Amino acid sequence: MFDEVVDLHFPDRYCSLCRKPLINNQNTSDINLTNYFNRGSLLTAMSLSAGLSPLDEAPKLTIPEEAISKIDAIGLPAEFIAVNCTSNAEEKNWSVEQWDELVDRIAENFGCRSWKLASIHLYQISHRC
Image (cartoon, rainbow, N blue to C red; front, side, top):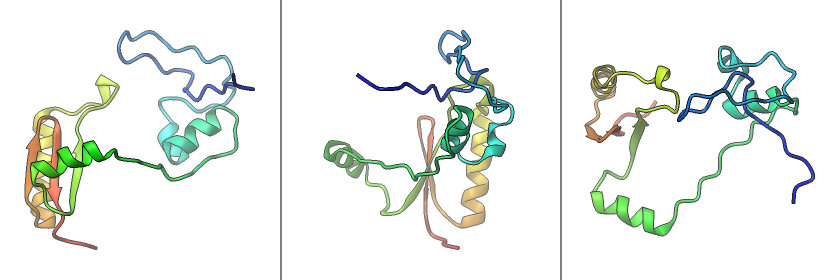
């Protein structure tokens, strides 16, 4: 089906569900879970880790009309910021109290209203730099 498969996982990555290590025998770089943040975007770090030229394309997002209709029904402002408060790695997650403090600081510093829906915080944009 494919001419070549390239594993973009870092060598010390593990499954977020079962916590078993993901084995990447193709990786010969020094990029790993402790230093990939210093290598640019996640795509750039993963491409370098796999021995590819650094990729830095912007993400492309296509939102289905059905999803747009559901979000529009919530009645959010025209412009807002959404913060996903969870990670695939439990050790990277903050406590609810830490996220609440960050939400309060953003709302205070940027003069915006905030809402909390489950584990996602939303911020109405009222200040532009």
